[in-house]
Image 1: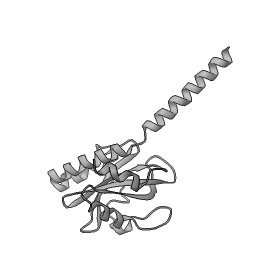
Image 2: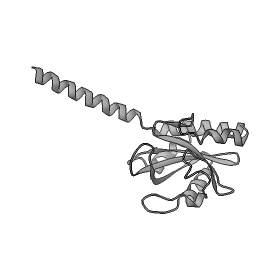
Image 3: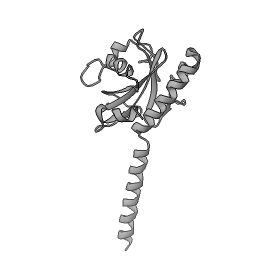
Image 4: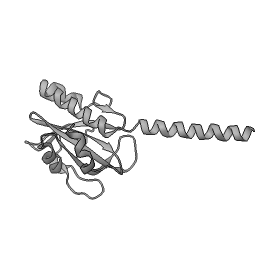
Length: 166
């Protein structure tokens, strides 16, 4: 009987742990909501003041396993990012971590759509080793473009396009 109870307890613990891990992953809906909120903030505020908020790893714009970042596509620069290695680099230096293919231009092009757009690429995931598939949503916000992504091996940009139109 004790073995049975221990087995049930172990299964419950594993099930609860898996749920906790899933809760730590940002969803596509959260990404769209945060990017829209961030775009409103960027348009409504003094650029220098609000942009510094996107550089904070533990700030309002970083949550679960992702974060919002800001591009200046007109000048081709990453304006705000929680990683000092990325902030300030040229948009064309944003490269897929697996293929080396540049994707910054694709982000800027996707932002031109009325409802924004989605771009897939491999990137480092906060708090995890290696490179992970990321699908980022980007939206224009005045003179800037605001983006965030979901780390997911199954979702595709095409599937997510409907979410940006909501």
